[in-house]
Length: 139
Image (cartoon, rainbow, N blue to C red):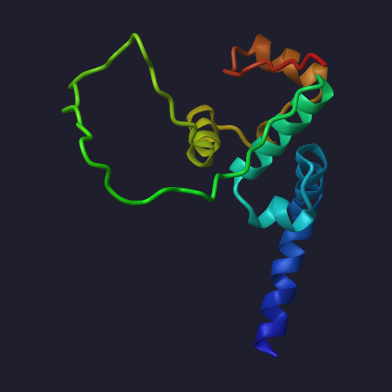
């Protein structure tokens, strides 16, 4: 009986916070299933968005990982010692989507309950010099 009540409370919390609607929107935008939008990583969603963007522009690329990875040592190979410091002529980036969005959310205190959608409320916030960030999206 306890497990049923616990599961019911989780469901009520999801409904109250509109999480299911959020997952549906993410699934629709990122071209993934509802299950994937909840349980899978952001990397998959971003990759699907990039695939869709490229496809609309008649570009196709593969995001499959090559399975023919050769293992072993090769005779005569020379490994250069690493250079210390930042090498600006050939920068290398790492795309860590898993920690990017939580970091931005914490840095700018972003949450759905802080969004101002009514212009009058935004004007009041501006007049009272409340710190806010105005976002506009171009489609």
